Length: 412
Ligand SMILES: C[S@@+](CC[C@H](N)C(=O)[O-])C[C@H]1O[C@@H](n2cnc3c(N)ncnc32)[C@H](O)[C@@H]1O
Image 1 (cartoon, rainbow, N blue to C red):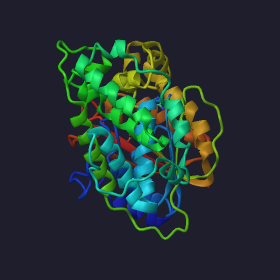
Image 2 (cartoon, rainbow, N blue to C red):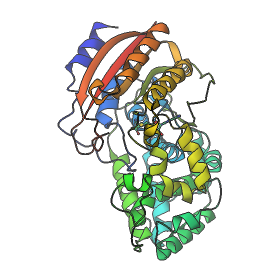
Image 3 (cartoon, rainbow, N blue to C red):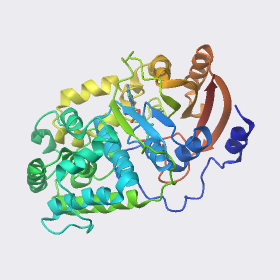
């Protein structure tokens, strides 16, 4: 690895104690996300402009946002449909902004008209739905209509939702969904679904924490909440998210974004061999039930309780598996097995960065096994740094894990 890259990595304060100027909260409350400063710094240090980033456990796509903002392309993958939906709209809105900012704002504006039965909140010129679809298809994969088909697997599951949401709220949600279905243009419908998925928890009645939803602790009382207000807040937050500045690009082609719904616990498929950097924080053992925490959104997308339990069984390191005596051994084995197919997404000369729970949190086997696996596959560890997680809005601040380790490897 070049001296310049090492000097750059060594000069960064990886604790990111001071919030970076201009960052705003993400358009989804998904737990355990990267702080963007972490993914920005690694991408800028390890890849050239125009490079390709691959995150196999991408959550809502923070590494993808960093890729697009720094003029790179991205492939992001996850098992969780809610994460994939959020990752698709956030990365595509940013990529859209790169080619024509007005289109990104107009998409949000069109949705605001639908939510508010009134004026376009953002004053951007409205767009025909198919115009927008063509623009998105040029930069994002899959096409919006294909993604929608994968994401909405059936009618909303109102019966299980009724344990979490007041009747009035479900009626308002149903009417918004019906209006959404009338919209011309698949991208606007995808955007609308992402919005509804992001606000599902807010308009429900269990406000204690997402952990209560994951643990099936239902609300004592069902209180009506305004879907319109929650949706307008999401639109404003998402506008602030796309407002953030980007690095200028000298490339002739705009960055491309590509999302993949993938279960690495049983996928041996080879990747395209085009990425310059694999950057990811794999799920931490026994820490979070990602799928269960999203159950309200999954019900709205048409998933049943049985579907959700099937997804949980694929989730590596899921918290609900912690009662099995070998849960951490299994977690580590699954991460190592998945690595063999994940590296086939990379170019022969490339880098790989893992952000793992620190040894002190009792998960050292994962780190040791991954290091050994990568060494056997021909990868050299060239950078290792512990960072503390003490900010209120960063990953794992709500679990016992307070430190994590960044590992960077190179090949070729
Ligand atoms: C620590 S989170 C990644 C968060 C991400 N860095 C972000 O900023 O949003 C780990 C992710 O691994 C995903 N995951 C767990 N098991 C998986 C599996 N078998 N296949 C694919 N993804 C999986 C979870 O759904 C979760 O989104």
